Amino acid sequence: MTVRVRFAPSPTGYLHIGGARTALYNYLFAKAQKGTFVLRIEDTDLERSKKEYEELQIEDLKWLGVDYDEGPDKPGNYGPYRQSERLDIYKKYAQSLVDRGLAYYDFCTDDELEEMRERALKEGRPPHYEGKWRNEEFFEEAANRLASGEKAAIRFKAPGKSYTLHDNVRGRVVFPENMVGDFILIRSTGLPVYNFCCVVDDIEMKITHIIRGEDHLNNTVRQMMIYEALGSGLPEFAHVSLLIGKDRQKLSKRHGATSVVNYKEESYLPQAIANYLVLLGWSHPDEKEIFDVNDLGTEFDATRFSKAAAIYDLEKLKWVNGMHIRALPLETLQKGIEEFIENDHFYFGQSEDWKKSAIELYKNQIEFFSDFQKRIDEDLLNPNVEVTDKLKDVLSWETTKQIHGFLDKKVKEQKSDFLSKDNFDSLFNELKTDLKIKGKQLFMGTRVCLTGHDHGPELGDLVPIIPKEVMQKRLSNIATLF
Ligand code: GLU
Image (cartoon, rainbow, N blue to C red; front, side):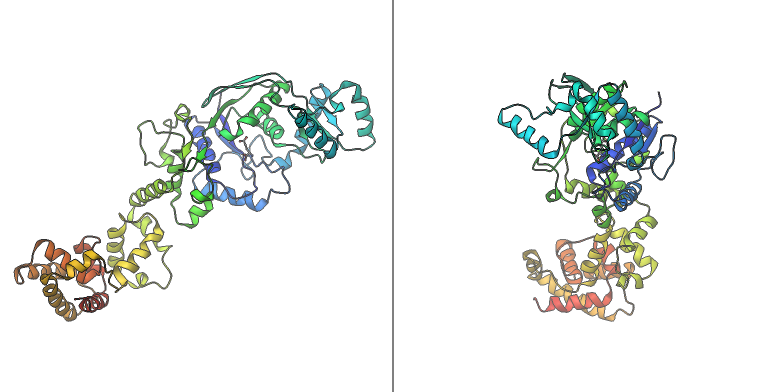
């Protein structure tokens, strides 16, 4: 059997991170099994579905590296891959169920249905359909009304028995009898409902495994009924755990952005998002936390899905992003960083050596490309002093005044725009040998005078990329604080 899986988004908004995770799982499973991955657009909700969202979702999937074998823009043997283009197929299937007495035409109005519902609730019964049209004696009347051009919904006759699902993640799930009443397959407008199209398509597209969120379990029982009625075996199901926030509530904007596009805009790396999402509800056989999802082959083993809800932790995602940034080749990193620096920024006026030194220095300290400019602005260009208790303490040392006097003179004498690494080393040595200052006094005094901060990167790497002019201003600002 060749594996065929699908991701079936509704184009009613941006690609959600939960959807992206489902897509990744299907993509990786197909890849591991040398199977086929289908993208199917579930756009039968004509009011909410927009072509624009379809395009944006596809763009975000591609950005994440999720590539599919068949889809609306990748013809295969089972198209069309947009449900709105398959309406005739659903009609044919629904008619076959009607012909076999497993579904019926229903002429009830919305008001009648609402009345039925209210009555059932008042009498403490489940609000199941109990209209007359399910009874065979009205089939003829139904046929006549249809023939005279009246519109009717096609409703499925729920068998009322219990169903048991053997889910690859959740195990044995029992749906009690009468849990579900008769439900609509095709509305009177001619538009089919999700549960029906989904099963028809999964059968027609020869889908073998369905990996999707646990929130779909309640749909599964309806879908099992339809598979049965259509005389088709079930695919294998894997309902993966829900994503929740740290407060164990349903994931929402409070826990961070929920659309992939937001992360793209915030300069997250696609490979970091993919890595992080895959780990929400699945674990690597070698317990690896940082990896390129494209390197996953047979390691992507569907028995490794977790049953427990997965906690979406933005801090962890940021950490993962930082780890992927550090793993980038320097040139790629530079290109990425430069996209997030303002066009007229100081950075672009500097030599290639300077740029490379700055990137080498900060690559271990940033979590996003966009952090880089912030660090340059603060560490290299802002002459203001950050007055903290620790800094005040350093300024109170006699040695710091000596260092200040020495550096103020030496920096002024400098001819070039920057102090070279060698220059800085020799100044540092002079402070040691001539002024006899050492250890903490030497390091902290020099740091405060030249950087205006009481902490920061290694001085030997940092000082050679601070413009002389900025150091001079910092030294003047420090002078006012003694
Ligand atoms: N269109 C459904 C959704 O977006 C697909 C569910 C399924 O995978 O069956 O949730």
